[in-house]
Picture 1 (cartoon, rainbow, N blue to C red):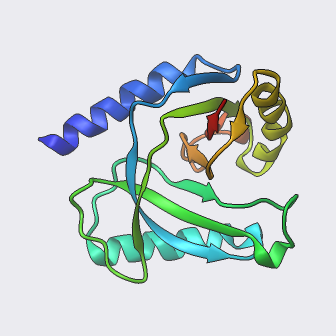
Picture 2: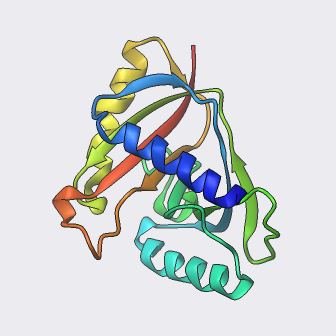
Length: 172
């Protein structure tokens, strides 16, 4: 029962965000627990790592709360491609037991900037310059890893209609 309540709450949150296309700052109020595969190196590995994550989630019998997310700890503007640190993850219930090679984590920040990018998943990076300008223009700085949550299944959705929720922890 609790899992359906969380899934319903997440659906309502995502449905409410669907209409929001401009960046905004909000009190986070919620967080999510995830099972993740830690990754190092080029983002070209994403499809392979996502497949590895899905296979391990299935092997461990974990129940997914929603679709996949990525958490980025640094960026190509900061480090060489081979030094990029990122997690490919799936939200899971906080009571799920997660075993190696996966790690369990919690994404929890009190204040975030967010935007929904609509377009092909491989062009999400174009949403970052305006989002970062919005953050700076409003007197905030980034204070944690960026999370992208993929709201549509690319197998069932035209690339131009895919939506990505980008969440950036911020502080004044």
